[in-house]
Length: 447
Ligand code: NDP
Image (cartoon, protein in one colour):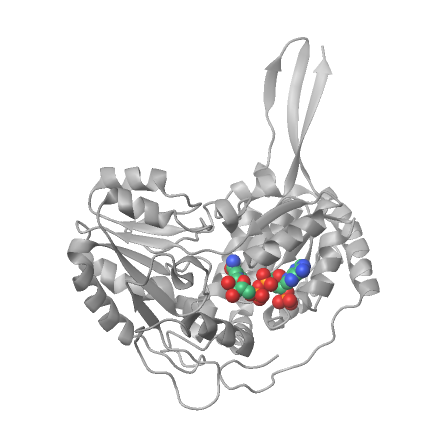
């Protein structure tokens, strides 16, 4: 692994080989049986203990995340705090996962929600431990065991989490980590018969490959894939606040966020005011060393990813570069703002996953909705307006799994998160995630 801020090698590791992956899955199956048979209160306390363990090690885990991904340390700390919060949240759900009774003729009918068995979580490099553990916490609450594969570039926090888990008084092998590249080690998970479900976060292209590989063994899937989310800013919004919040709405995590509002659509009458304000506000973001508490934007996560983002920018003319990057090594890139590009261009329609925003004017509500829905994606987005009727009218017609009104946030532990169209399917977080980690069984009793 390489520190993206300095290009220094941080660590090396060996990939988990096929027989070790197989052993991990067999052991996980044993651990799952023990876990599912524990008293409910013991499972609840087990998840609470994991939350406490993460809180005790928050600085260490945040430092590893910051070092590995190039994340500003303050952001990394918030993410690790969300890991602890997810385990707390799902600990309270252990004894609330229930079926129903259904009126039928000739007897009594009831449903049960049962654990699936072994769940594999294939995690991305942009939010490594956060995404892995939001999924793991829900899967464990439902009585499953979990095997996590972090992205090969960013395994440090997840590897340390697994070491800490081994010190907990929980069934052995309940949560395990396998290391190595997606096309080999990831594929072992997506094709292995013992894995009952894959929770995958990553690109739409790889999501399709995961689906194909999982088809042979009919695995359950949650796919949280790419996005090209729109922030729709109407002239009747609080423009000052929309401008103030727009930079972090797209450039947070250096734009490496599936929910980034990378298409900013602005009503034509306030377009120039918005663009001027947005450029000025973006130029004030503090770009710098991830370990500095004041830093708001770090580098991109890897050299390969820097090259990918640059390739999107190469054909673009006239992008405004707002802010300055540090001198010296590192995969740095300042925020780029592309004003009124061709609506059909790649920069408008494809996921760049870097510090690049396009700003486009629209004429009326109908035009805004058509533009918002014009990509293959449908993950998240925002609507900025002071008209409640318009907010709801537009929200009902934007094809997206998660929308915010007068806000640029998408992810809350308590609410379902996931995509429409090629942004994937299934829902993470909230109570909805539990449905994806259980089978629904129906039992009829003749009376
Ligand atoms: P991928 O989708 O390829 O990687 C995501 C995860 O899947 C990683 O753990 C990766 O492992 C694993 N993986 C890769 N190939 C396979 C496979 N055949 N079977 C099973 N698992 C596999 O993303 P990239 O890192 O290549 O990033 C490319 C683009 O994807 C980005 O530019 C961005 O647009 C998008 N992306 C979206 C994310 C999101 O949050 N929705 C997150 C990450 C990327 P490994 O890295 O070890 O090979």
